[in-house]
Image 1 (cartoon, rainbow, N blue to C red):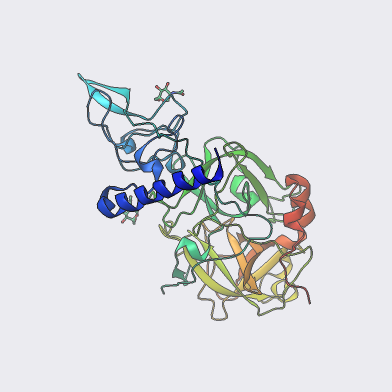
Image 2: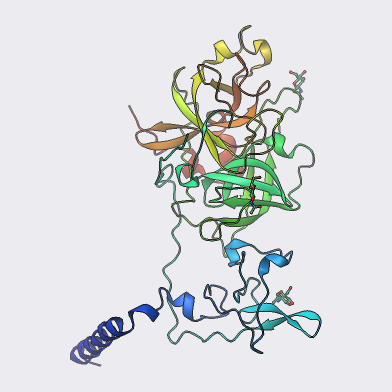
Length: 387
Ligand SMILES: *[C@@H]1O[C@H](CO)[C@@H](O)[C@H](O)[C@H]1NC(C)=O
Ligand SMILES: *[C@@H]1O[C@H](CO)[C@@H](O)[C@H](O)[C@H]1NC(C)=O
Ligand SMILES: *[C@@H]1O[C@H](CO)[C@@H](O)[C@H](O)[C@H]1NC(C)=O
């Protein structure tokens, strides 16, 4: 084909597109994956809700399937292929039985070459698209877009702990969250989640856990080295897809410390009171760092503070991390990016006078994280501003 022919074909094509756009604006698909299926249709997210025998599909939420929002399931009855079956399917009632049937979704004509999903690198961490706060103990509700690195870790259906996404496949959390078992059985990790008891299929991604690494020197008595790593299970080596609700947080360089009184924020789904139930929505609070010396003084925690701990509280003791915030992030902003300085670890009560929150000092673990994960690019702290 010579160039002229190609140009002519392209011209005809664009006239055609322009024409149909004008005429059929309302029915043009937003996105090919909404109208047709490519391959096995596992990326199909359209709205057909009828099986090949024209029976109405049943809502996915009625079943206890191992697949979730990242496979397109949720509170709806559209045909999906969450398990690499031949094509999208759904459950229907036939006779008195619930059975599985395929759906008739047209194949996409041209193989859609979908753009590869966006992925964070060590250079894109710590950015957030939203800073909104409506008015943790004290603190305020916040959309996940303000803390898009927050991971919600579940054991079965129960919320277990928070965590922070540091690279597309790795989450940092607290070792004490797993000290009962150290097992990853039934553990799942959700990213992009604003409410722990609601499924937000558009924004959340869920993962099984491939590996759990507790710090080998974690001390169950004094919470020294209260840090753990979760490797989430990706598909074809891809884990978290970057979006406004899911992004990595930056790691500061080894042994970086910020001055006392520096303002940072803590985020989590934790209790509002010590004897409360979990907050259903992500909250965040502003806290100020307290020097290690001060924190280990008589006024605060005397000799309970090790060199691997970091304290922070609000000056009037109204805001604090609490139960259920465990494992979640204490982040501090530097040059417009958010850096993970602490992992919520322990405290005496919540928001009690002179009893600040105690966090694992993340910058003591850059080498440990690099060794366990191979993420030396991420742990070098390249995005940290240099003096
Ligand atoms: C997909 O899941 C359905 C329902 O559990 C099952 O019947 C079917 O065999 C599965 N297909 C594959 C390929 O795993
Ligand atoms: C989530 O929890 C809140 C508060 O307990 C409740 O009002 C809401 O109905 C729950 N949502 C779902 C989907 O269960
Ligand atoms: C753990 O901490 C307690 C209290 O500080 C200490 O007595 C004990 O020796 C520590 N255990 C290990 C294994 O280091």
